[in-house]
Image 1: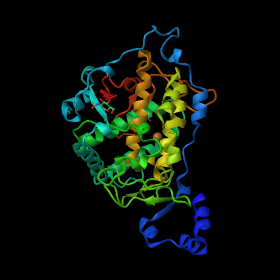
Image 2: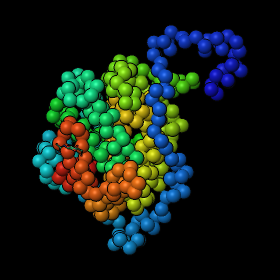
Image 3: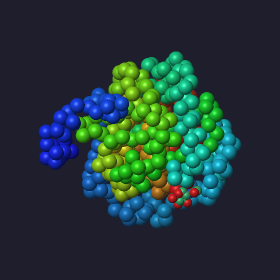
Image 4: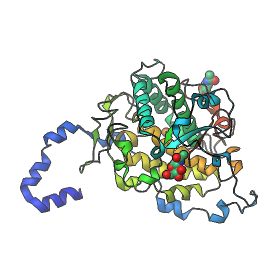
Length: 382
Ligand SMILES: *[C@@H]1O[C@H](CO)[C@@H](O)[C@H](O)[C@H]1NC(C)=O
Ligand SMILES: *[C@@H]1O[C@H](CO)[C@@H](O)[C@H](O)[C@H]1NC(C)=O
Ligand SMILES: [Cu+2]
């Protein structure tokens, strides 16, 4: 809007008519109306900050703490490079054991080699090229099986306690399918979005060799179909919302939204000592702004995994969750909050069942609370 006004002021009637008629470049870009995608609900960073708990509580001066910050094996030494990761590390989790001194390491994108990055996006592309199992509504390839499960489960996995644990499980299901069906045999990456806050589009994650470009939301509020890079020209068949309408993989970055995904927003949320308070703050805070900031497909709750950047984003969300858990040993051993939307609600327990509708076997909250517990076996490089 502001762009239109200043453009008119600067160059008058000729430029106005130029804006009204889409140029050949714009046509080639294939714009898409963003209204169909909606957005994730949010809280403001100011709200999260105002309700942040004082540092004395975070550092453990409260009665339930020993007065010393809990140390966990996440402080153990990392392999120096991602290449040291072996398939043995991946197998460790699958057989239910985890050597806490030698788990798989998820490397921040900047610590992840160009070769690993390529292999990672190619394995996702590989899933898009495999046939659907036929068990998931609307899915036209194996990757869309995974997207469909998120679409179908949406009301059960958002805005309630299970949000962080279910999405941790979902990322692990995605990882397992990449390894077993597309032979991905390297360490996993994660994305420290706080280092790219306000400039997501400048990250080399969003370049042709990797996830493809991140075009800005247009001045009249449209998204752009991704035409180049690993996922250029992708047609999605799950969504928008609960529909199954063929549409392009589109993005529409708003860097004023990505600009709120800062380390201080994350740590204000992580200052909360109650799991469910922290969860609500992360979900409606940095998590929601990352989705809305990338825009278009990513801003639509149900089918957002249609954009593969979804998994990089949820690896970031899971990293924040693990960092909160590192603050006290009890945080891998218990959970609180509502399991359903009843009033009064049923409290969630460690036995609550997590499902991926058969993509992988069901498990329980207790199996995924600890990323080093055996069902899972990974830590983050920092
Ligand atoms: C990963 O990156 C962080 C931040 O740049 C750095 O502190 C850390 O040492 C790196 N880790 C490895 C294993 O390269
Ligand atoms: C998995 O969990 C879902 C949800 O609780 C349940 O409906 C389904 O029957 C479970 N599947 C198996 C195989 O236990
Ligand atoms: Cu989700």
